[in-house]
Length: 180
Image (cartoon, rainbow, N blue to C red; front, top):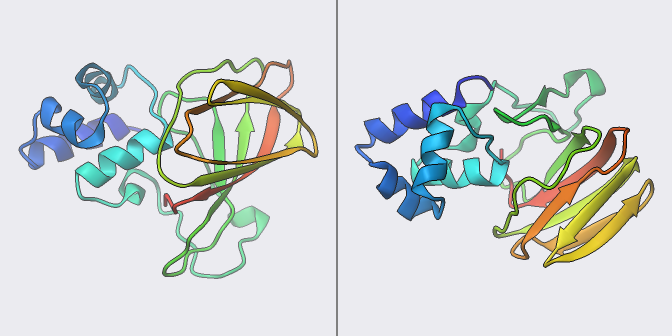
């Protein structure tokens, strides 16, 4: 996961694109893309996916080999990862096979994690709170979810989350479309 910012810049330059070109293709601001390339800003998976699409590469280019060719994925095979500059931990929960439609993950949100960035992108999202408390904000409406609660919404709705407690929160997440 290290050096994603260098990979983005190198690919952009190889494709003879300016930051403005990349901005127009991704909908991300030039200043934000510049911060990403310098490694001075964190990057959400959804933003990384937009960049990968604009650079005509698969998002897995940015990650260690996390592909599993079996339908089952045992706990010891689940590889955790963080996006550069983020303290949220993700772990893929699915094997890989052609034409998958869902992206299941385990997400760990650290204590006292405040809203950071609003997201809006194609697809759907489902979250089940395994442990802790998470506040989701979808279209400016807050939903307080405790252990055992779930939420499911269209990803096109502007959304963000936070963990307002002193304990980490653990979520099972299922997203569409497939990211990895």
